[in-house]
Image (tube, rainbow, N blue to C red; front, side):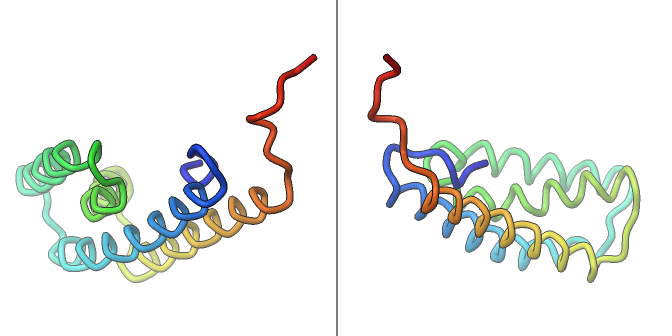
Length: 119
């Protein structure tokens, strides 16, 4: 869970926002690619390009990397089991927002134990 990682509460909540914003923008990138529906060699080439772009930016900015991670994951899923594009994009958005909200609620309700030692 990306939302639960980070040195403090503010950075953890910020990561959740980055996750949602990055996924929304990644869905905007994924929509035309999935609508095109590349098959065979074209699908592999799209996946390779998305993977290379992901690796180039993921260490620097995870939210920007989601521009490429989101369509990459959806394209790989389409290779295994083709699904209608609209519901696929909607479900990805819903699951990401739900996950970020659950993570934020957990962060706000459960005390941070990182600073405490177990004695």
